Image (cartoon, helix red, strand yellow):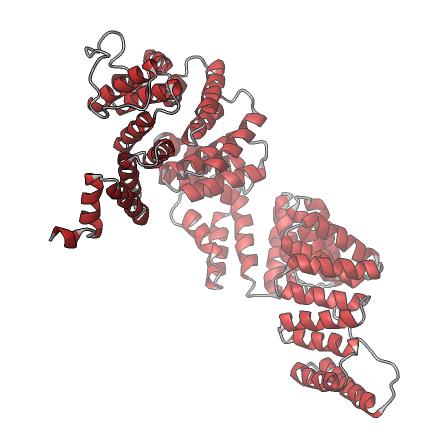
Length: 603
């Protein structure tokens, strides 16, 4: 791609009257002369003098904007164009010039807007179309760039740069034959155009024309011996067509010219790597290393594959998996995204990117990826199962169960989904369903199921020797009078004593289902969650207990403890102060130990 000529336009004045106006015009004329001689500082000074005498002439500001643009003072140039347009609103040339200044500020959308206004005022304004085309090219909006170059060329503004740049946009859209035709025209108009030869060399390689591709790169190097990209790409072309020795020489030359991209090619292919391999052979090497859990070796092989075949979407996808296995989550997500960009129908890449985002705890983003994978492949069991797990992490247990159900419809022998559906059922207080799923998972060979059964289900089936009349050691006067709620609550206390925390949570949840105003059940369920280090969820339970009883000192104390463990020291302090005021001794001790509150009284 070559930058176009910057099409700026002078504004001229006709006629004048009065001593002051004449003097201002003389300064203006002098500024114009200096502008044409590239004395931009001198031009700005003259325009300043003209404006000092006469502040309502749009041309003075419009031409000063040009001089400031040439000095790289883009923001000031925009400001002068703004004033000129306020004085004379319908100046297409000034809109064009402001577009260039906005481009210099990298405010590409604003630049496009300015060029659009210029062409609306002057539909045959070829140079504004050309400038807008280059802006679209910079924004990588390739089809819009092509459309604008078509317009400017159709309006008889056909220069070598326009054909070259349109060719570049077409090459990016993989319209290689059309791109080659544009480069032919650019070279016909400017036979010394090194970049056009380089670009034509690229598309000819893509079209399989090795000989002419190398010839074009060589011509580009002759015209510009320091053109490092031409050495780089000629080397790539040599390598892809089997000439490894010449490729290494070219990459070495590119590196001498400070082309850092050449280093990777040299490292990959010119350091005793053995006989040249095809992209597919490197891909197979990567899969073999991945199967053997050699993550870095796999990453290296897939990298070589995409060096040789940049649109090999499966290589990007499999490299993403290797990066995830190696713990490189950001790179893994980037690789899956690249694979999706090349092939938007690649359902496995969506699901795999979703999984990587789950590991990175980007749950909301992960759900979107699993949704897309399932939309592309409605029978995708793995995507359903991992979408379910994501919903579980978000506390959407019923939704998670629904997805596990879908996964199990597709594969009834999926022990993993049975085991994880059990966990979701557990959170909803379905102890019977939990144990049934864990039993099924164990039968299907899930290696974690038996351990979870011992934790969640060991009191079921007549093995519990305790009676339901066990004295409640946590509270003497309970807030609930519902016999079923109290029964579940006491069972929860027993499980808490046994340190079977998940089962305790299930019992407390059943108690809450029976009586939603059972404050002790909320408080002790929160206590069990603290033991499982689920502090945020515990805080929600303490919040509910305090909504039911604002003077519940133990709930304040335990909520403060949860906040302390989450390193919310100020929140913990506030809760412990409330608990202390209500006579809670534990809170008093924590304030003394951690904040020295009450130290003087102790002394």
